[in-house]
Image (cartoon, rainbow, N blue to C red; front, side, top):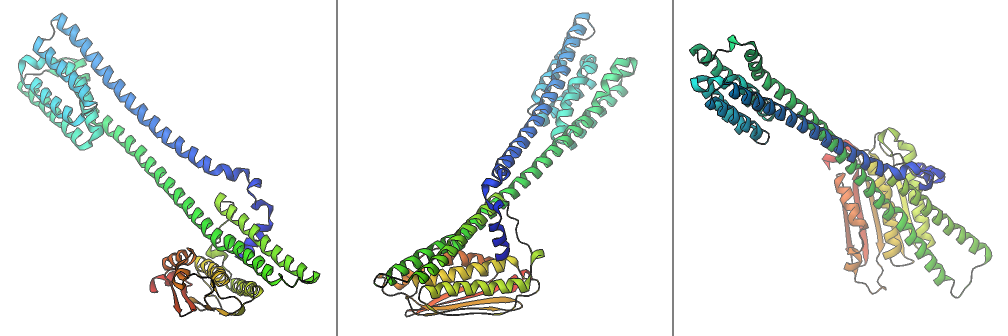
Length: 437
């Protein structure tokens, strides 16, 4: 993984300036999200407008024919009033379909069974059908039950001789709208549910994108702390150590050049890691997966990483005992190995910042088939004037590492006996063994 990071850092494509599309990815996702929401709102608005138009046409036609029939003497005033009530209930059904559907069913039943109102059956059919359609759109079962009750009332009225729809073809055609209404409402309900399902799917995808974005940001923040700030802190400590060491004894040219070359290499590493962080944030850096796992190569990189951390501590004057034993398993957890790399950086940085200068320290890494164990020991600085407890509790590095290690099923323990600090970490190396630790 470090080789992959280095290759990425050497690639000029790691710079945000060479990825103009990357800076717009987040804006594009927001635009897609806004467009999807807008399209759903437009579809719902179109459906509502279509429903309103159907209701308006039904009421308009019904009232027009009712007035004409009343003027011609074809219907009596009571029947006309029943028709007006049905039209009013159709308007109410736009907002309260179930209440209006039940009420109009009752009114329809009275019209079919009461002779003075029977003349309005044909003209009531259209507003009654609109109410049933809206009720079925809200609740399909109730809509079909209303249509069934209305057809039953019509059948009873026909048997009793109160209603004679067979005498008029137009009346028969109008009455067909009643059984067709719940079917239309069902189709509208299916369309609405389909739109809702699509919107739910889009919302789920938006949440997944938000989670991936949060994971990218979290990974970037962790990498900034573990790789960038730690190496910058090391540069500061190294330069400060050189200033103290060379205060009375100026180095020769060869030694000065060697020191500048080392500091330049560390600074270049900081730049490379900064580019890696940019790649994580803009999504142009491909993640490493289990398919890319190389146990032998990754074990060698861990050993090189530990040796690099030991060399940096020795450059600060520490006497370091560091070794990495064992081998990574064939199918190791990439996240666990990334955490192990970060722990090596964090441990070396903590020793550089908090250990007594020019003393002995140790960092050991043992790799097994199921877990990795990292231990370290050093003497805590006592000449800084800071209490040991404050030193142990300072910083957020180990706290954040402990959270990540616990999520992977491992443990992190640190203790202080007098001025001796000890750290012990157990980290599962297999994803399927997390639950056993």
